[in-house]
Image 1 (cartoon, rainbow, N blue to C red):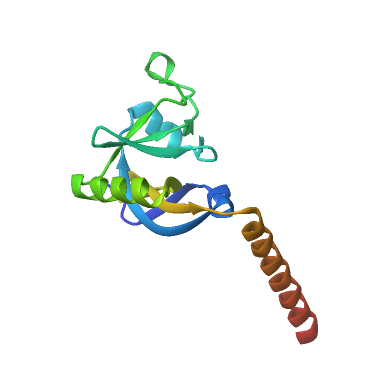
Image 2 (cartoon, rainbow, N blue to C red):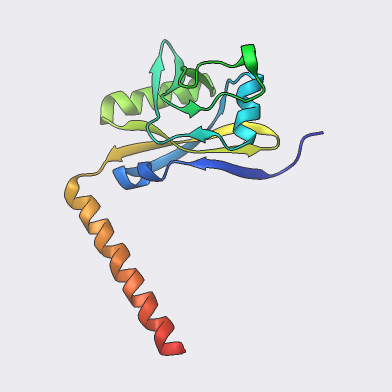
Length: 154
């Protein structure tokens, strides 16, 4: 019996720092059994991963899934290219947007949804250095305001 609901496994925090996320999509991912067991233990890293569309299929590259400790000969290469599962129409739509608008597909998070591993993909536009500085300034200002409010209420 599969469990219902969602459980986040890993998030790509660096992606939200480096890119503006314009739209997000959900995709399934093709994995082997030992990879799923390793993911259940939380041994996955999305930090440097990215997606590409080749021959009408979508792939995720540089996603690191550590080898399962009890997997012996069934373990696969931790950085192997993995196929993403989406409808063909969605893939063609994303291909058009990435080619025409110069956008990038970046994995934002990995999670279990009703017992299956899913990837949240973001259609992203790269931030410039001044955008990153502005975001950091806003974050610092909000933190200062929240701290002042907290001290005032005590």
